[in-house]
Length: 225
Image 1 (cartoon, rainbow, N blue to C red):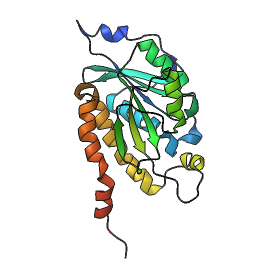
Image 2: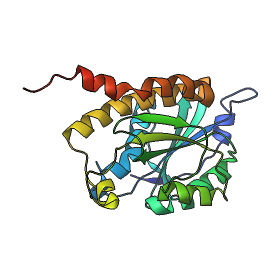
Image 3: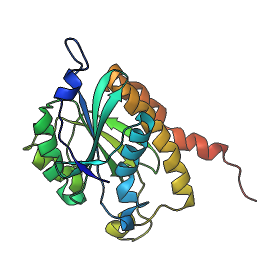
Image 4: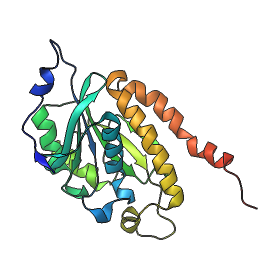
C-alpha cells in the first residue's frame, strides 16, 4: 500500500550526533503503468528499483508526485524516487523534490540514452538534455540549472527507418534484456559507492570500464556456423 510521506531529512539528522553527511537524491526517469514495464524508455525505473532492492529500501511512499523511499548507502543518507508524472513532465516531480530537501549538488538523474550502445552505462557530471524530453523537463524543473549528474543507460539506436518513439516504447528483446540485466548490476554497484567515493572519482574508473565492454563481450561470444 502506498503512503503519503510525513517525515523529511530531520529523521536522518537525528541519526548522527553532529555533522551528518549531506544526502543524495537519485531519480529514475520513466513512465508509470504496467504497459510501460520492460520497455526501453523505462530502464531508469528499473535501475532505481534494483538500487532500492540492494539497499533494502521500499518505494512505498508518495512524495512530490513520485514513488519515494529513503535509507542509507553506507553511512550516507539517500533518497530514491520514481516520478509518476510521465516522462515528459518529470520536472514537475524532480524540481519540488530537490527544493524540499534543499539539495543543490548531489542530484543524480538516471535515464535511457539512444546515443549509447545497449547496456553501456556512462556517468556524466552535467550537460544539456540531448533531445531527451524527460531531461528537458528536469532542467525546466530546476529553473534552467544543468549542474546535476546523470547515469546514462544505453538502449541503442532504432533499426533502419523505425520511428524512435516506437523504439523507446518497445520491450527489450532477448539479447537486449540480457545486456540490460548485466548493466543493472553494474549500475547498482557504482550508485552504492558514489556517495562515499564522489562523482568525479567514480566517473573516471566506471566510464573507462564501460567504454569497450560490449566490444569485448561480442568478441568472446561463440559464432554460429
